Amino acid sequence: MKKIKLTKSLVPNLLTLVNLFSGFTAIVYFAESDFERGALFILIAAIFDMLDGMVARLINAASEFGAELDSLCDVVSFGVAPSYLLYKVFFYQFNEFGILLAALPALAGASRLARFNIQLTSFDDKIYFKGLPIPSAALTIISYVLFADFLCFDNNLCQYYTYFIVTLIVSYSMISTVKFDNIPRFTKKSFKQRPLVSILFIIGFISIIVSLGKLIFPFMMIYIIGSNIRQLFLFIKESKEPEEEIDDEEESEPTPFSKY
Image 1 (spheres, helix red, strand yellow):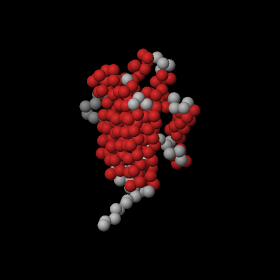
Image 2 (cartoon, one colour):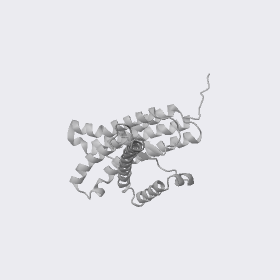
Image 3 (tube, helix red, strand yellow):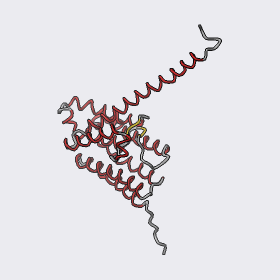
Image 4 (tube, one colour):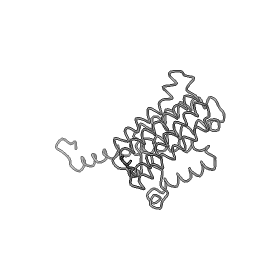
């Protein structure tokens, strides 16, 4: 009788599957209109999504299989579950068009993960992510759904339009090439590398805890919009630099066809 060989990658992979199980459980609770408990399981999925990577790096068990499994689980927990929540809470009233709108975060999230996997060159922590990470997108959607009344002061018109805006912004941000900061590790080395980012994240975490989660959505929107503004600023800056270099070269090296 052959012995079953257990590898050290089993531990992080099991943590990844707990992420998937939590996402599936969230969908079940959303279907029963228990949105708070469903949101709790999305948060649990996010915790295990973070833990599996940390454990894999700690025991040197990161692998391509683990990365692929992680992406498949993320599609369910942070793509399908939030999209179903959007449909259940708001977009159901638009029939087939509502299904399409609600599905946008899931579709964009799957595309974002596929792009991430083919561009993956190492399993080390990254300072930036290209496109909004799908767990951040899920957190943005769920925090808005839970605290829409608080954020819009129970204004139905505000909630009506904001559902569309949030869904479109989050979906676009995932498939965009905008750089989004990874969460700092809050070590001395990380703080020295990115002091401003570390301070902003610390302030955000404290604000979220003090407000009992009500400030998650404003913090996430600042994170998303701020990253887009920074990308636009860098794009404008980079687009001007080549022109200036070309102008300098033309002035220093005139040609017979130059006008004097």
